[in-house]
Image (cartoon, rainbow, N blue to C red):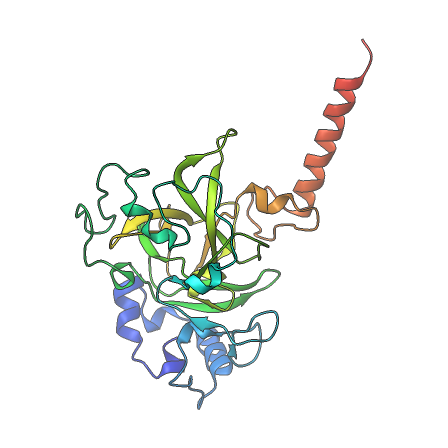
Length: 297
């Protein structure tokens, strides 16, 4: 569908990337693709493909924020110092590192990194020419998964231990956290409880790339990872196992995300930890444990 909506040749790349051929796709699947896309449908040439998604039924739709604003695609995270004009210096921010400035530049801070870092992609020590284009950047499309909303479907195999792409968004000061936000952690700076201090947030709700739509799974195929690439500290998505073509790309959001009482996981995995049933079971176990701890004798 990704290729057909963009009038691209897709049969040969399909064979190269997945080992499948056109003959392996059923007539029902082909018919469904034609119905979803439509013979005359084309994406606007001024829009990036990852600014569109496939709903459960009907034609592709533009990605919008909850407030109805069109979502915009970024190739890498952006920093605007004006957004930080009224912000406070985060606890744990290095004394030798001026504030405010882009946390991506922490690699230049000798207080945090006394020794030069090596690029995760080319292994060069210190700054190099690597950037967003050097990540794996697989062919993916945004689709709607029943019960989960928008998600990311792969269109080619992604090997294990692959740096897929940067988790891109606007780097903003700490404050009210949006569901899409990801902490930009201060490397090697822990508080008395051993937690990592947050230097800011990566906010992709308006400006970001496809990684903002990766859904949670209790048995994910990828993880969020801090990586030094091209002279910057970047938040990236890295596979922790092979992700086959035409499957959903997922990541674990972390247990803290699911502690909100109203949230429940819909990943459907056999070992799901945060479904409504699993959360009720945990609550009962905690209640029973508390009763035993407070019982006399």
